[in-house]
Image (cartoon, rainbow, N blue to C red; front, side):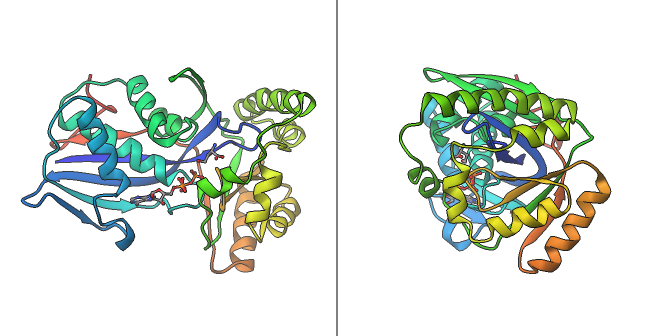
Length: 301
Ligand SMILES: Nc1ncnc2c1ncn2[C@@H]1O[C@H](COP(=O)(O)OP(=O)(O)OP(=O)(O)O)[C@@H](O)[C@H]1O
Ligand SMILES: N[C@@H](CCO)C(=O)O
């Protein structure tokens, strides 16, 4: 049996559209076993219990890439990562399926090779990179080749996810973005993206506040999240900064101390009782693969 644990990820971190992403301590756990049937999927939503399941598709993609036959599989899903909420659920499926297949076939692919294939499946690397490597990752593509670097996140920063009960599909949230932006806006954005990484590493909340205002996607995507303005005001009332997590609908609040995070969590949970409001911490680890009862660090080399 192969067990895979993959962290949720919050992509973009505001000003790092398609570049920055951070792994979180919310996990998706998948197990892969031989089955007498072609495919069994247990524990996943009804919509996903079919061969189009993204976890299975990733496993099949890997098998095809190394020219191996696809085995009969039982996949068991136990995920704390809600689907289509901006917390990288699709990346957990893709990275989980690829990493499991890598271990299943003893293929020995390293993280860079997994990231390349995961990026092809996802279309952009900013969820897949931290799902594989952990921490904050900055990733760019040189042709099809991802170039990635990790940044440790300061423990002085505290994070609260505000997860509404409604979904936003990434596809829709990408389609509403304009096709071009001006040089002035590009320069505005580049500088803030660079300084955002510094603010996260240093735990510099005042710098973070100065550079968090995005011009590339948040103004457009806010229209897809009916409670965005209210969530911003609630976060500001607790001295926090609000970003759209990935393509939404989740919003990520960043505050400067643990007590402030708890107060915001309580207030938001009270105001929106049907939301999941969770204090989260960055995950230092990316995907973990456990095979035959032993923890092997990521995939076996
Ligand atoms: N548990 C799951 N089992 C199978 N497929 C899933 C599961 N969770 C998510 N998916 C797939 O991922 C899709 C959602 O991906 P989408 O990119 O829209 O949102 P997200 O990854 O949660 O958010 P974001 O990319 O903004 O962080 C679902 O429509 C489904 O295809
Ligand atoms: N960078 C991606 C992350 C969501 O998958 C986006 O914002 O569309």
